[in-house]
Image (cartoon, rainbow, N blue to C red; front, top):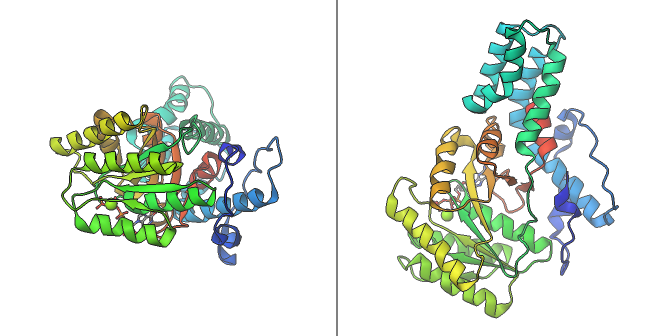
Length: 355
Ligand SMILES: Nc1nc2c(ncn2[C@@H]2O[C@H](COP(=O)(O)OP(=O)(O)OP(=O)(O)O)[C@@H](O)[C@H]2O)c(=O)[nH]1
Ligand SMILES: [Mg+2]
């Protein structure tokens, strides 16, 4: 837990003030159910990090309020009375989990041990089932994740995903987050497909304060990546964030374009890109699974960012994709502003899903 905060990182400048001052409205705080205390952190982090951590933690929990209201509350009713689990109980539980967009395959996997017990006529109490469900979901989302940003200089990160999932916005949020942690950031406008895409990234660059390497609309995205990475080397930048086009994942040539960008990056900086983040929109539901499959066939994916968690009660898709593809979730998107991004916290996430 909270490995992200424990990691030592360079501090060149103070984090943006909003991180420390932002608090959810008081009524939201009151609505939050009790959570288990955080695991003890071996070395006490400085006060500044402690405040930041607590603010991000609150943000994470507040952003998942829709999922919590719908799922945890419904499950709370189901599990309210401790009794023996029967077939009807399992069916109801299955339906609720599927409604939250935990895919059928994952739900089957979650409920399989309970089904086996019932079939064998072994007694199983709802309390026990609830505990094992929580443990299993936690295991599915608490995947080992290497440091973020990757330990390379410069570290090259690609933002990949279909149209409108939030790649460009998320890139800007990640830039803001990294700058707050003291890293210098440069963005590459490799979505040359639309002129508006380059402008959008530039606007974010001005707002957040990061330089953007761009070419004219319609330019070869591989050439922009080449130019961007050369610029990053020359300027001694810490992290390069590459915005890619919202390619239709069923169109062969667009996938080929993505593969080419990845190849170009590796030529300029051996080992790059160090992290390919698949950006998924939580509201798209099960379609996210086919997006992960298709992009994963084209390039190596390293991690996930799930956006628009603020707008949906279907946060369960995060469990499915992380579990099926073994991809750790780095952040979740909780709104449209640059500060609306929270590092993924497996335990808080499970707390939002389950009663
Ligand atoms: N509510 C909410 N909206 C978000 C979030 N992330 C992105 N958005 C919005 O989603 C819309 C699309 O975001 P973009 O960043 O342009 O998406 P994109 O993947 O870059 O889109 P293309 O460049 O067309 O492929 C914008 O209106 C964003 O403000 C989020 O976490 N929550
Ligand atoms: Mg975009």
